[in-house]
Length: 82
Image 1 (cartoon, rainbow, N blue to C red):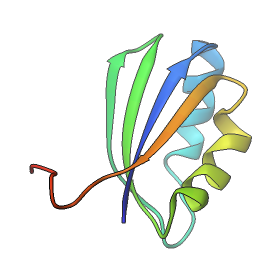
Image 2 (image 1 turned 90 degrees about the vertical axis):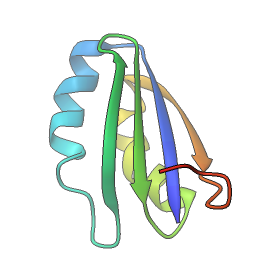
Image 3 (image 1 turned 90 degrees about the horizontal axis):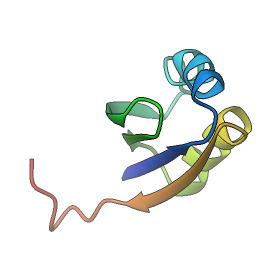
Image 4 (image 1 turned 60 degrees about the vertical axis):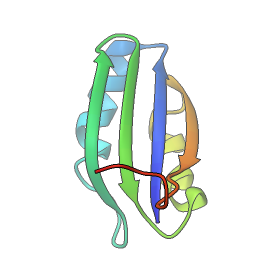
């Protein structure tokens, strides 16, 4: 399934430092399809492929949780475009 994450960045320096390491080495069974930076110091959205939201959350929260407020959502494959 596809999961979208939205990161409201609260500590830009820490977020990008951790993201540059964390996002480049996801665990087996997870794949990062895209990272969309809306505003480098404020907002970033990512598209993941994984078994569940919990798998993505368990991977991201320990690393990025202190530098951003994260929201997670399942992509509806019947309504997605692209």
